[in-house]
Image (cartoon, rainbow, N blue to C red):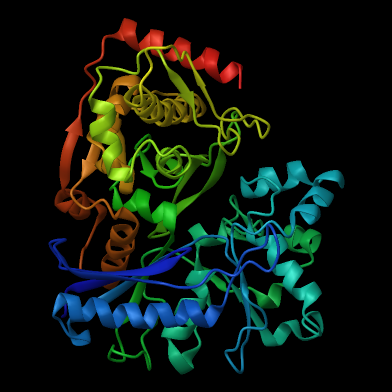
Length: 491
């Protein structure tokens, strides 16, 4: 049996393919970007054919970079930008409209109308989500309402998030129409408690059931490749998960209370809540992590709108640095922020504050403040807002977190990671492979195809790079948190 695993990470701006050995050695990887479409302010689309082309091109490049043939691949795992919505013709395989991207706000008024009609609590209880244009349900309804004849021939059409679209295409003439529980749980159409599509929700959103894919677990053989350029027929497509759930799995956060933070443009935080969905009292989302062997793992999810984007703003907006990589050395050139506090509310504040009107601000600036102090305050501010979210999650969970696994580009910043550990007073653990979204897809794919046998085996081969242990005095931590709370109250 071929034991290399291919992970297809289909993201918002491009596709990454990583090829891993059974021992988790990276044999090769590649990335291909594709165009973003902005029909009008607030609207974001992708051409589905651009998505598919980026996948096939990146598969070919990754195989070349790994110096292996398609015959060496024993399993394929898929992870994807969540909530992005596609509808296509089952007979011709052709999309009837561009993909509506998760960022798109065109259905904000429809979401507001659902709230005004009194549906908020129904959706919250059944889906764990909030009524927002972010999710797929209102997007698919929009496509049906705005493409001529779409509703009348709904039985001829197929709806899917990107995972579903890719399996459909990868399976060739078989046309396998499936999704997994993690992606289904992001649609506003899926009931967390029954683990099925929900007729009441479908009726409220006016989405016909015949459009929907079959919902499956996260590590099983859904289909096999057929007619895919560069790959032989018959490779099992055997793992799927939405990107943030995939990152949690890739961090081997298999136990209740284990958490990860992905530091990208923003920051996504997920904590494993075990086999029971936990309803948040702090505005977190309750969603499905994964289902393995008919056992479901749930998670709480919170996000910070601004993380790495604050460093980009220092570079592009203020011109304090020439390159994002310079921020760590500049910030480390001073022992602390010199009393400066930065609240990174450049796009409002998310959980647990939920203040759209908040705006970014520096507090405590004096004649002695330098650009180094401001850089240090920006890194501290990123960590402090994440600490707010994690403390709220721990409160929802009913027990303190004992560690945080970190990934994403900004986790390479040692200064940021050390301050994160200090302010949380728990270790921050960075893995050897920080592309944990792709790693999670690979682990699920290999598990589904039998390359690995259990989560215990995966935990044993998961590799850490560094543990950042807290070393800040608790009195100093309390002072920092009090200063932060005061600053947040003033933005």
